[in-house]
Length: 112
Image 1 (spheres, rainbow, N blue to C red):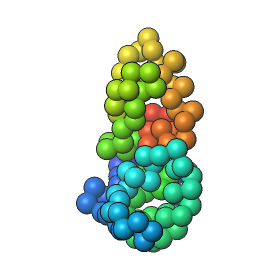
Image 2: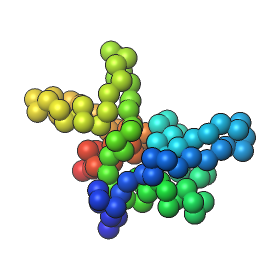
Image 3: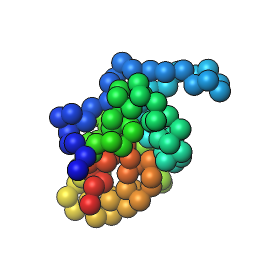
């Protein structure tokens, strides 16, 4: 089983520079896009990234506290806690977990 919460924290100070476009990225970047599987495959095989970004790389199960996503209709930006914030809407809101980048960024909230 994957480790949970306590040991499952991305290093908030860790960054690396992408060779392709020279932009600086952090652990949250790994899950902040629908191409999360591709990003994980491409970068999480690198030891430094894998060690600094266990949540971002999916090697453990926890919500990334820095992860946010845009709601489909309202264009409002929310965090993982929004999914379970209102008990009467949890079932409807869990549909957001069907999106790979949200399931990755909110791994604990979206876990079955």
